[in-house]
Length: 195
Image 1 (cartoon, rainbow, N blue to C red):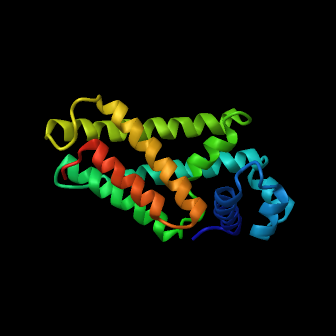
Image 2: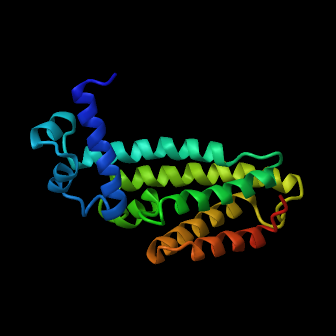
């Protein structure tokens, strides 16, 4: 069982995650965090040195959760089936959130790239890990004849990430799945995916 202090820390991180996803890290103030969590300034500063540390902790936790998501989503009897399952899970994950918030990493990349290198570096690492994981699956699918072989797997993996992020952004903007569904369908065609 968590101590009262641990519960406060968890509540701060949970509420900060929701706020950062909706508003962005830069646009979220300490007062926003205090209001959302019911914590006092003393509580917040006891657990964190400031909003930057909260942001780094939220992004680090999201990174670990995303690694787990990738591991679980990239499942199937063949590499092509793994990619198909991944596409379905991306859509379902965003659908379950009502297309609110989008991708914390994509949001932070847009917000922090020019102003907050500590956040940008962490997000850059997440995208590199995602591309690397997809590259391995795509290379395996190419060897099975389930994905086109005329383009390198690393380029195809990067293209997948770029198109998915754009689809998530459009789905968030419109609060509807159409753009993301079309993006995933286009990826299936571009990859010549045969699950």
